[in-house]
Amino acid sequence: MGMYLNPGNSGFTGIRNDIYVDKSGLIRLVNETIGTPRRLTCISRPRRFGKSFAAKMLCAYYDKTCDSAGLFADLEIAADAGSYQRHLNQYDVIYLDLTSLMEEAGEMELVPFLKQELVRELSAAYPQLNPEGSFLAVLLEAVELTDNKFIVIIDEWDAPIRETPEYEQKYLRFLRSLFKNSGATDRIFAAAYMTGILPIKKDGSQSAISDFQEFSVISPAAFAAYVGFTEDEVQELCRKYDGDFSLMKQWYDGYTLEDIGSVYNPNSVMRAIRNHKFCSYWTETSTAKSLMGYISLDFDGLSKTVTELLGKGEVKVNTIGFANDLVTFRDKDDVLTLLVHLGYLAYDEAEGSVRIPNEEIRMEFSRTIREAKHRDTIRRVQESDQLILDTIHRNAEAVAAQIERIHAEESPLHYNSEQALRSVIKRAYFSYGDEYILFEEVPAGVGYADLIYLPKRDSGLPALVVELKWNRTAEGAIAQIKDRQYPKAIEHYGGEILLVGIAYDKETPAGQRKHRCIIEAL
Image 1 (cartoon, rainbow, N blue to C red):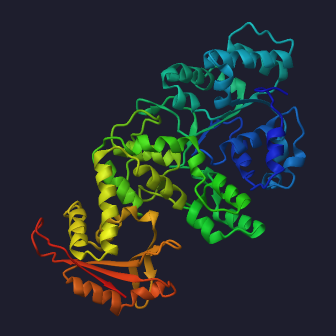
Image 2: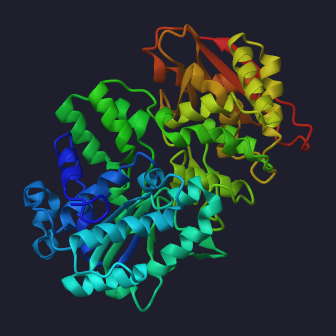
Image 3: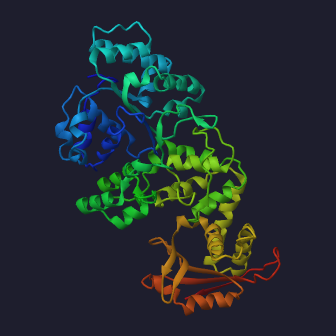
């Protein structure tokens, strides 16, 4: 058993000794690629979404130097009669945790260190091996000696690109030599499984290692069920360990994937289960420290987009041109795409849009945006804070003026649509999260209340029921709130409720549409 060659099953044993959600179905998908042209698989998903757990599971399953039958006997994969026994503990496994390797290498360059250590372990395992040839020659000789190809598992494959971008080209050349070599790749590897945060780095418009089948958080395809915890899995955890599912959903849900539905952050769910506490565990990840830099980038419209996202809005994004690194940005779409890969935004593949997924991430955005140095961002935070104060203090004239300014940012094409009006309110009140929880389309009385801002526990603030209408008076907007009994949606709330009616005349020429506001206490 070595560090890099055949690491055994101790890592997965430790995982099984704790609370465990069965993700062994992933093995079946990898088994299907063994010995086929699809043998090279790259999975990318955010930090703390179980990538290392999956890598350790695969090591335990394939490593021929250990007996892992007991670890898998009660898991989903054991029921797969077609391939489970055929591949269980049948291969020499090369396991490379790139983050650990970079630390181990110290002052030595990564690739020479990696080759040196792996050849040393191969020579110890197979003394008849000639270690003096090229790295590929040593691997080929090992395959010939054992009549058994390697399974290679690379965890945090993108760590060198994320942490040492100046070394990127040397590292990519090494990967190409292993996995884009028509004379050696098929002879050496039965399968390869790489996992990281970023998809494979692009070389121009193509992947730098183009033979890999890629499955990202943007397009996970068959691997969607293994991106995070599914809703059924979280419900079962809550039943078994007495967790509050509704709070779990509010805090950690939101990464909805096609054909799978809701996907939850596994690390945060498990921390909440163990600690019996719902809060943001995201702050403790290293990527959290980088959010400030990305949302402060000086791209036209980025600060407005962030405020729209914080207001629970959805924003269209083009993910195609992203270079798959942390430094190459052409426009705000590239920034938003990176935030999807980092887990800060959820991507709707069908709609091509992004949103902040849950309360945990919204807190990180809210905390970070208040520390941002970008002038436009600072202005928007201050204006939103002031708007909330003006609303609470019933300064209707100031509220109308600020809503009018925000509304003027809308495209003339969508200025009068119901969706645009709701978006205006959400963008205007985007800093609500410090004191309020936002509810949309709430069944109430006769119909649905568009937007209700409910104070967080013990804040002492009034609840806000806000209605923005066109071709009505502000009095008419208030009358609609009352006539349709929207406040019934929060009739059990014991504090003060403010009704906020805002209206304008859509027939007035653009630039002259004066907004009016009335604020009444219920």
